[in-house]
Amino acid sequence: MEMIIVGSVAFDSIETPYGKKEKLLGGSAVYASLAASLRTNPGIVGVVGEDFEDAHYDFLKSKNVDTSGVVKDKGNTFNWGGKYEEDMAQAYTLHTHLNVFEDFNPKINDDYKKAGYLFLANIDPPLQLAVLNQMTDLKFVLLDTMNLWIDIKKEELLNVVKKVNAISINDTEARQLSGEWNLIKAGTILQEIGPELVLIKKGENGTIVFYKNNYFIAPGYPTTATTDPTGAGDSFAGGFLSYLAKENTVDFETIKKATVWGNMIASFTVEGFGVEKLKTLTQEDISKRIDDFKKMISF
Amino acid sequence: MEMIIVGSVAFDSIETPYGKKEKLLGGSAVYASLAASLRTNPGIVGVVGEDFEDAHYDFLKSKNVDTSGVVKDKGNTFNWGGKYEEDMAQAYTLHTHLNVFEDFNPKINDDYKKAGYLFLANIDPPLQLAVLNQMTDLKFVLLDTMNLWIDIKKEELLNVVKKVNAISINDTEARQLSGEWNLIKAGTILQEIGPELVLIKKGENGTIVFYKNNYFIAPGYPTTATTDPTGAGDSFAGGFLSYLAKENTVDFETIKKATVWGNMIASFTVEGFGVEKLKTLTQEDISKRIDDFKKMISF
Image: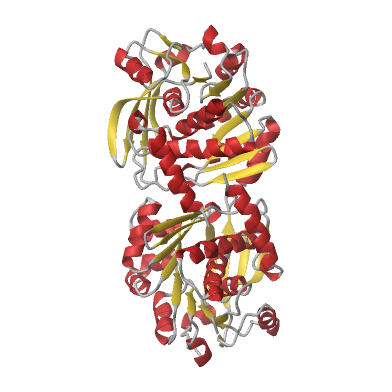
């Protein structure tokens, strides 16, 4: 196993100006693994409920996602309901039913333990740490988080941030965690906590990368077809890490290419509800969009 | 005269998290002309009051700004007071004293009338039109505006937008004027009104350029020294148009270089209060920053 992902597997109810959908397959681990599956065969560490059907497993397996790390527990799968207003910039949570996720205690199987690349997607920081501590052959760990944990478990979060190579975090959360409004200063402050790589996600405005003493500015791809922003950040992170895993290289040049790769996957993800677009996305689609993008930023 | 600028000449009172300053030389025509003066000798069309001192004229002239189009009227110079909160993204107007600006009726002198490049900075749309109608040898006209005119004089504004080659407008105003949230769609809608070039300004996130059927995405330069955002948009526009005027060329390649040139000037402007940074800025400073920027976006 080259790369594993720990995070949520969920059913989402999503409302945007473009429609309303119920019980969509979602969750950070699902988005990240589908995005990663274009370059590697990622394994998911997660928990689902009795309402998670064989068809869902079959779909993930058909996309080269390994589900041997997914445990099925009594009860229902984690369920999130959210709504986006016209600006599509922020999700308003309508409900969160943790269900089986409430007692999630990730146990990493022997095959997964030896993975070199680990994505700790957005879950309770002590669970992220518990996964990290079970790994034996790590080369690179990327962590994602959210405002909730900065609010209620900042100390535990900082404790795990210190131990990882990289964090991906959105602009609002970067300001909140660093205590600094200027994003360039914020990125540097976050590096000082521990990670040598900080990825600040700015939605449609792309990503700012801080690696050692270098910056890389990757604007977002200007899609006109944004339909549902859910999973953009997790698609980015999964796509990003899969690029490093596939190259098995961590240096600034590879990180830059990985960032653009992740941004492009995210730009496709938002063009459909849930994981719809990730079902049919190919490496060729992404490469073509990267070529377009290169022309758009050249001068 | 290669290029003239019509807009406000003002004294500003500005408060930001970095300090509070009174009676700073400002106004759209001042910022735009100082930015433009790095590549051309722009003329200003504007009005000032009796409190506008010789020292102010001397300063502008020392920067190769022609002030023969500036009229002095009885009363005080236009005075604006504004405040920025920590995010520095939006100015909150504390007061607006129009003073001599209230009866401004721009008369263009014979020398100015023959200018090929005209920047209609943000003023009352009928005044923009009155200036436009006096010009005899125009090659290219750029118009800027603000939410106030979209709110109260939309029809008059659209009437002048139809007649210009280009508009520069911020993201919020682009959404408001086009009625479309997606900025890429908004830019295309604005082109359909008339201008073949639309420049959507996104503050620290840079500029999106729509020229005929092409896009150009220019991220902002990631300065850590933002002190006062006042005049960023006018510096951008003045710098942008001066680049076209100096090259005396309007094509996509020149427009892309002009956009980056304007973005870089704006990134310097915000690093000091008022026009402080524009007092000492050189072409070499800008070229050096463009080189840094190129490295930051290359992959």
